[in-house]
Image 1 (cartoon, rainbow, N blue to C red):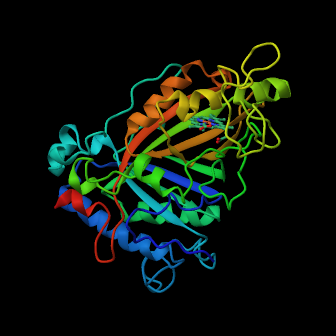
Image 2: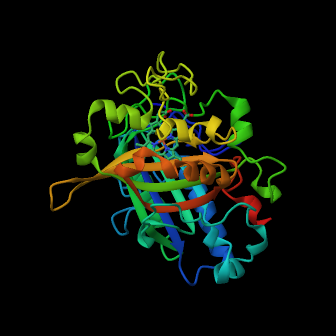
Image 3: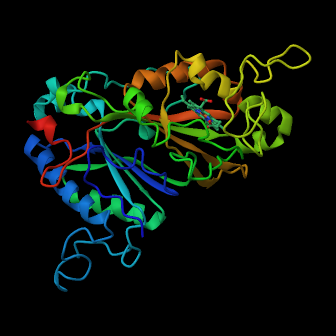
Length: 376
Ligand code: HEM
């Protein structure tokens, strides 16, 4: 029965204890959508989100209260399922502010400074239809139907103004944002999220996640940048790799999740530790070594990704992977870490096929609407 209120200083769904399920949608505005249309949509989304996160229907009339002579306001499939810890998080893509659209909406000069499409990284094989978008909605919940219901009903409110460009269903969190949560596992069978920024690390959240008064423009203070990467994992090849090799690739042991330099899951890795043969205990090309702050000028990011499986291909192989989501004060943090991962031994087993970046505005107080500062 957990409720995460929609209203607050920051948007929910970022430091919120990671829920088990995700439905993520990227939307494009239609060619005729005006500034007033967008404001109206954000107001409608705010009211609806405040209701949905309390386990209520999208409007007071809901699924059956509007009488038999019109389509119901609410699609009904979440009736009786309760709030299910639902969070709804909104973001604005670079394309909202640039080009013809930015001019039509009169917001070209309000773009958050660091909001720009990500550069192309080594090994990227990005597909346009899995990338980008003017707006995003991240719905996370303990019940997948509650997350899908939220996106479905918010999309209905956008009818004629914005439509889905791509969407992703994710099950099984691959990160924790609290040590109260057992660290979940990704589809390679390893604990994922051990060294994540946790919700109680307030100094690190200020340093690495929330934009502050120095971040420009001023309306964006208290926000953050969301980077999303759809990463396919070649599961069958991985499953044929020896356990020892798998552990060398990650840099942690599979059962405990302890660093290969020794200790337990939450023991700090010792990157100087060497084996009898003189090689580093945590190999030079291991994922954890390359992604660690020590290798990235101290940079940290808040990871909040989910597993996905989309059936099998005609060779019988799983179409599956990690829907990677990270929040950071500046997308450059993700860029720095991802560039370091160029020599990652993991690259043999993964392919990035989708990519997007969004500016996540600060939270909203009751009476206001999401992203309001952008229009003032
Ligand atoms: C750590 C898996 C992609 C950044 C880890 C860990 C695992 C893992 C098992 C160790 C446990 C932990 O601390 O969370 C994967 C897999 C990926 C993937 C299977 C792709 C399918 C990425 C990407 C980035 C990233 C794209 C960012 C560009 C990190 C960071 C850490 C980490 C920052 C923590 C390192 C530390 O401080 O020790 N990952 N990861 N990972 N990963 Fe990934």
